[in-house]
Amino acid sequence: MLEDLDREDRLRLMKFVCSFAWADLEIQDDERQFVGKMIAKLSLEDDRKQIEGWLKSPPPAEEVDPTRVPKKHRQLLLDAAKAVFNADGVIDPKERESFELLEQLLV
Image (cartoon, rainbow, N blue to C red):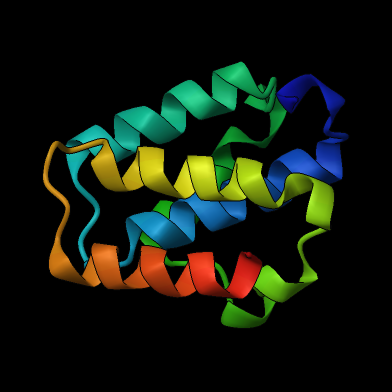
């Protein structure tokens, strides 16, 4: 499914992934590593600096509106959210709440 995403969709996914990492207001090393792996997996090496910038300062809220995600990409977004929340081995209550809200918006 990831291979079906064009560059713009892959970048949009990474905006969401980075914003999910901010759910507990702290970026963990494991979350940074997860983002790095996603950059490689999505062939976004040319965009690495921009994506890593979203780990220094989260993407603007209007750019991560889950209701604007195409229906065909919504499960992929939920899977990515779950993966980043689990990246550090601890699901913070704020992360759980964010995931539940995201799930309600997308399902």
